[in-house]
Image 1 (tube, rainbow, N blue to C red):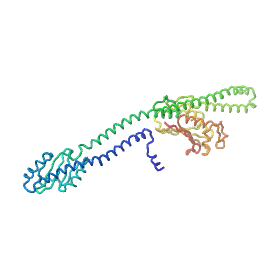
Image 2: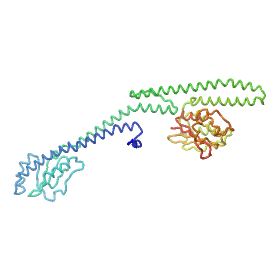
Image 3: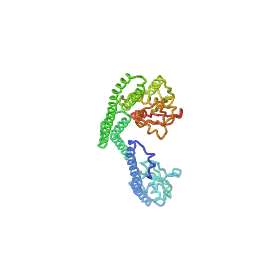
Image 4: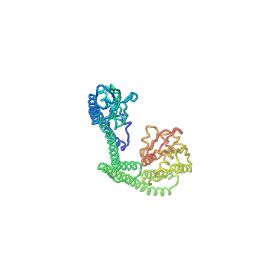
Length: 442
């Protein structure tokens, strides 16, 4: 509960999350090891080595003569300096540094400086210009003395090599882990793409691979996809068969009514016509999107053809906008199913209103087809029910201008879902009636 706010900042991709799981422990381990090594082991070793040199300098200082010349001073201490590989010379006051010299990249220089100054109060300056040389400036009765010796006597040689080695192998092992993780996540990505494509109405080839758990999930997905396809096929065959078989008695009824007087046969012919319309609606609903496969389609051109066909049928329909429609841009759609869906929306708009307006909006993420009318619309609390099959909202729509079996919006919703989208109903801000949007993800 306390860390729930972190979800807003955490990445959503499994690849990025796995990368963080790999990288963060490596960085933390390297930081902890580096800090512990520098602050404890390396500093302790440096202090011990520096104290050894300090003791040597103290021993040399005890052997120094109390008086004499600078040459006599150097001659007296020469036998002690030579075995310790220390060089001594007197320097004028102008050559004595005003402050200590410590490069910022020197990890152990500060520990050397503190140790020397704590044990040798006569030190004027400490210079550690590089990793090979060290210089100390001491105050004596005869003047300032410069002591030069090997820097490696004060601290371990090149302590940064450990850090460089850890960073190098940390990066190397992280890269190897990334490659291995990528190979392990590739089957999961393929499964995700196959499931997403199937949700949008596309069936792409897929075979389970990878770890045992991913193979099990892939096999379960294939079984689920096969069951759904069989269910859709059985529904299509059942409704198509029933609707097709009923056409024969309807045809016989029409032939029988044609032998009667027109005045007596008119009511019966109207009933037969309504039954024929119901059968056609059943066939449209049963076919769904199974009659066509996805193919590259220009949505703008498809909408223009649908609107022109509606205008030829003496319908007041206008294509008012086509936002983001680049010339020749193709989108994977089922043209026949989408045409049927848009025609149903336009037919409903003209049945319950007098005017319909169609618009198209395309972005890199979605495709939206909007149909608006000036009819009575559908109340907000009944829109979810209106999309269900065989639902007629006569109280909300104008029944005097025609009726159906309640499959128009259900067919549109089915087509939208088959394209990986949805049907959204709302109020038209332009015409005041119903606003129906077919939103399809790209």
